[in-house]
Length: 249
Image 1: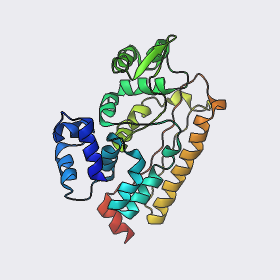
Image 2 (image 1 turned 60 degrees about the horizontal axis):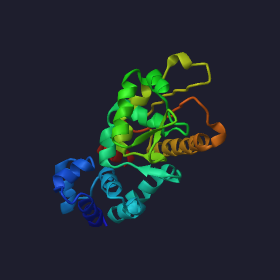
Image 3 (image 1 turned 180 degrees about the vertical axis):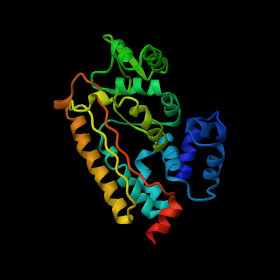
Image 4 (image 1 turned 45 degrees about the horizontal axis):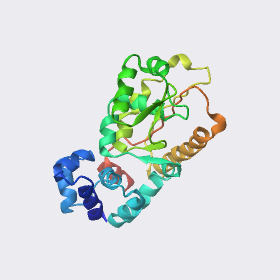
């Protein structure tokens, strides 16, 4: 199944060599070469990039499950809330490269809103850089202008790679405004403690439940209005995989 995805990528980019295809899906060339040769079990994020880049998102859970049954279950649960979105847009390496630019990313997010965005709003949020950023999206035919508003050419909810999600955590954090505290506009928390494996699972489950609840609020048209809003939440361990496994033992 992974070979099929790689074959589909080669069909998609017939004039590209494997190194150029690796660049397209945002995987390092040595890593892509190891994927082609099946030298070892790929990392989850690299499987995501190959499968989604080749347009085979429907087999994502199955292909991961063939490598590792537990990993296959993990990816289904990891993406379970995101996959509930209607009109999903799975990003590919080329689009994510464009969205690496933080101003372009925010412009894209604003254009994603049900009402799209305007020049006035772009300048309010990003300054004059917002106009340059939206022009980048216009030139790439990702955004179009209708009735003095910028909207996506392909409307839907974007599903990004974990690398992209990580990159833009601090993109969002720049827009957290302490002046909004106490005005029912924002909320922030941080909690730290050494936990056992069951505690770690409970924290992850709590975040997934919060994600589901927030998803219902954001997708309910009764809650839609004129203020562009964001919600970001994440959790992890400070230790690496090896130390984490030792801790579980």
